[in-house]
Image 1 (tube, rainbow, N blue to C red):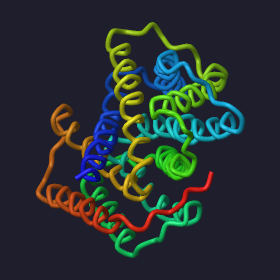
Image 2: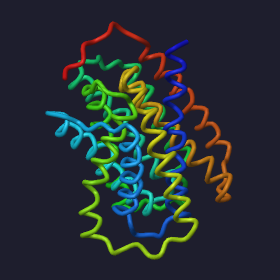
Image 3: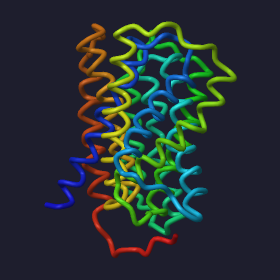
Image 4: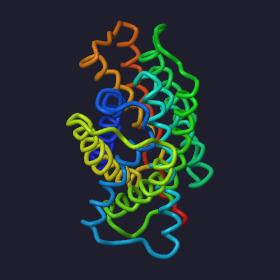
Length: 290
């Protein structure tokens, strides 16, 4: 029962993240991937830091900079480039390679076994997502695809290292440290490479509030909670819920059609999620190296 609750709470994060593509294209001015990523991370990170009132110490300064760069700076930078240049579903599909990467990184860095059933479920989910969102009319921008792949690799490393490096602080504190680190690393790069944002509209402000408080603060606290209790491969496969959300939002709000093949693909993805959780059912606990 406890594991099912952990799974459900962790799944909330990628479900909400699936709305990122819609919010980016409909609520933000185009052409500001660095600035948007920075504004998604830094304000809410500082707000949480004011709440927890605790800073890293010793070697954790370095570890938090690494995690902040992987989980936020690099990943979100690449994510917003991909979201700007690709349809939401395709951008999410490119990122869906992450579970496969996590499987092998978890073996390399944490010593978890690579189960054949887990590989099969990840491939099944990736194939289902591809059928679900890639249509003949889809625009496959090379830079957008490359950014999506780099972002998936970055978050895969961040996912595994966040499991390996577990500070003895609250999840809210751990989340705030990474958000602040990621935002601060993005700040000078955004100021150097991108022009100032135009005057923000009410829609822009609402978009930033949503992606900051809900799409970052809430969801990453749940995500890191899941990583502290579940195997990284178990958590990462829940990321398949993100493109599903993107497709459903496109159908509801952008008048994008869903045919019978796509509905079958949707069922396939849910089957892969069930299979992945069966493949990663609890094994003997492993000591995580610090």
